[in-house]
Length: 168
Image 1 (cartoon, rainbow, N blue to C red):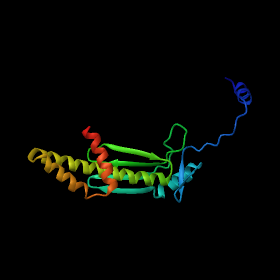
Image 2 (image 1 turned 60 degrees about the vertical axis):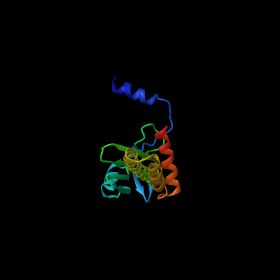
Image 3 (image 1 turned 180 degrees about the vertical axis):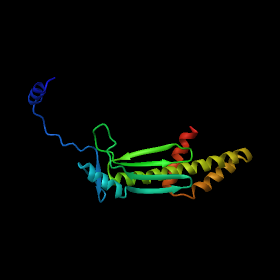
Image 4 (image 1 turned 90 degrees about the vertical axis):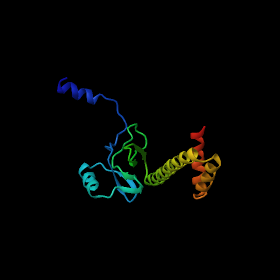
């Protein structure tokens, strides 16, 4: 295509709504993500800013929630700008992404609760196996009773629902 043909092609395109490109880069103003169109400004902000939303260490697990600075939603819907990752000794990673700071904080708390429940279930499973191999079912029920009453009602209900799924 010659330059004259290219110019004619572009001039004959139908008029469209102007598109404001965000280039997928965001910075934080307080806890609010703001699109950043200037790559140099974004890079300087990203280098010097604290992008950590929350971190929690639970035994050998580490839960981290950060501001990514880049939109990780490639479907064009709401931008996914925050990420929670659970690092564990098995090298498995649980990842969740969020649009807002508040969603990220709530997601971090939920992930920490999930890790705590999983650790309690592992501990309970090991205890249950030992007891069922060495004692009667009654002893098993007594351990479960004592173990459950050492936690809050909400935790007990969530643990019981998970346990019921495993025992079905």
